[in-house]
Length: 450
Ligand code: FE2
Image 1 (cartoon, rainbow, N blue to C red):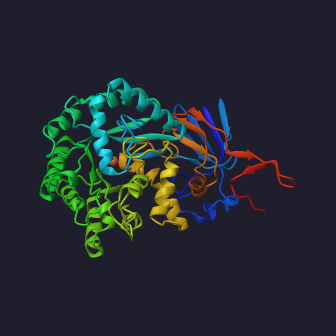
Image 2 (cartoon, rainbow, N blue to C red):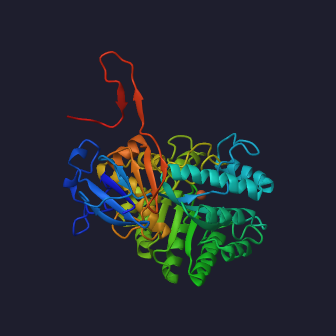
């Protein structure tokens, strides 16, 4: 074998911990870190870029071995919603003084004419370096096609080619200025797809009227159906409870047979919608197999800005969507760009914020937040061979934590990141050395008992 990762703890649902009916074997000790002693340890055998064995005490030997020593080994993080054409542009040409969505859009408008392909590629490559170091090995990025030159499209297609050996980059043709509102946008979008962009985007709530928004959803879904493509729209990123384009998106998905291939991103208006209406909407989404992508870091900062108090949290109804059987993932959306000044490609930070905003502090709910940045996001992207099981692509992350909850709590260090069987990044564990009388010298933020 090429590589064996020994004594690994797996997250729920990625390996041999699943019982026959698909439920999780609770005796395996996946809890809050305290019970980790009881966790089943497995060895992961890797050959020719694939996982070939996941079992306790693998007898084989390998050219290289990693001792996980009871740490969590997870499939890579997946970001289902990002804007790589804007990332790391913080301060160009100026910072967003108010921190609002509208000033961010205006700022992006100021920056666009100054963009060069080289600078876009350089910033995106730097971000992908951060991503790999964070164990984030698949990203769905929207790319603005409003500019007739398609400069950003060409730049990100170049980035996609260059990072392919170590990161899966999926691109969405995104009409930032509106499909109907911006002249030539649909044409640009079709050209972007012809050049190799993967997914059809949209922004119905930004069109001039509700009717135009619904019309844009219909046009884009019909085009995606014709071309056999997936759809991912910025949808109802608004505090207006009557912004209901998700209803049209679900209905069009159902009408056109796009089940399982469509995602609604943001969906923040759902937070403010009438409860009775939502009780009809969720089954419609479920029936159409429309997934939901929440972006907790961004929407907790951008939504509710015109509220006084009480002030809305602005994130979509994550636990309710999950309870309705809808696939929900969390996206990073922005890192150091006109809309958001912070971030470092850490999907555990995204899960941490999502958990708080959605008040998902129950044990199962916390695990669900981990799934929202791993397996659920992978499902939305349609990634093949994702997981820790024989036959899967050998992509995984060794975390300095013993279970997903501890990983989220600590935003745990990525001790090793493996891509197609090769170690592509290593990082030290987070420890500190104390100089206190009568106390141990080393501080380890994991909880130790007994
Ligand atoms: Fe976005």
